[in-house]
Length: 155
Image (cartoon, rainbow, N blue to C red; front, side, top):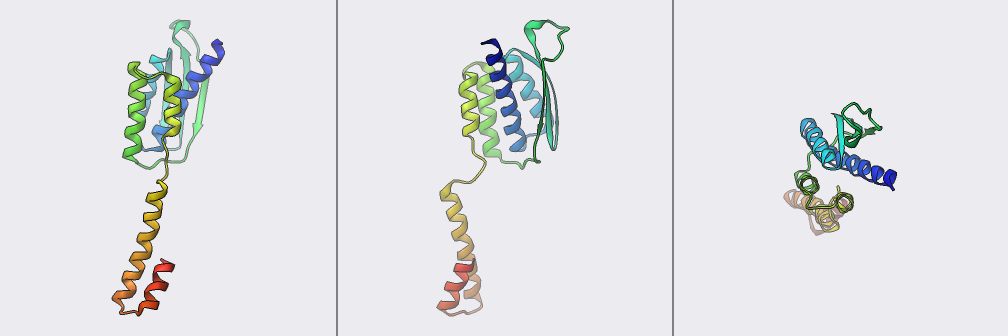
């Protein structure tokens, strides 16, 4: 049971680091968030965030000040792009876990629910806007209805 709990806590912290990095948080903010959440979950963590990786060493607080890390996690990631909406969602989950108002297991489920892509409706609107822009350009060149339809379809 103790090992399962250890693994769940490590998994939550690693997922939090992955999401914060993916959505473009700064390295100092990421490291600070990891350290704060880890402390709340019973770890002293040493973390290092770079543009393409996050390295986290986990020391269990109950094992004393001279304890060696039980695990070091190296997470390789593609450089993230800033997505403020997703970043706010992930930060809110982290803050709730830190202050104890959200259970770590529920927090992990919520982290996984944060999506990186556009909704279907937003994707459809984006596709339609390209078609509309193409048809508009064809109209500016005084195209006939057939030209507008072809431009919209190709757009």
